[in-house]
Length: 51
Image (tube, rainbow, N blue to C red; front, top):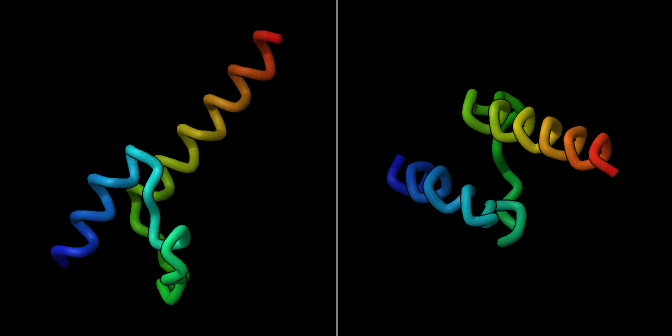
């Protein structure tokens, strides 16, 4: 639980388990991962529309 909390905090700085090679997470993603992915998609769409 402590490691997941640290990952949650560090994910805003670009760190993720996949960068460290630990990809044994379950397919059930946490809600904050889904929100982060949606936010990144929104940012990418906004960048492409400003060009």
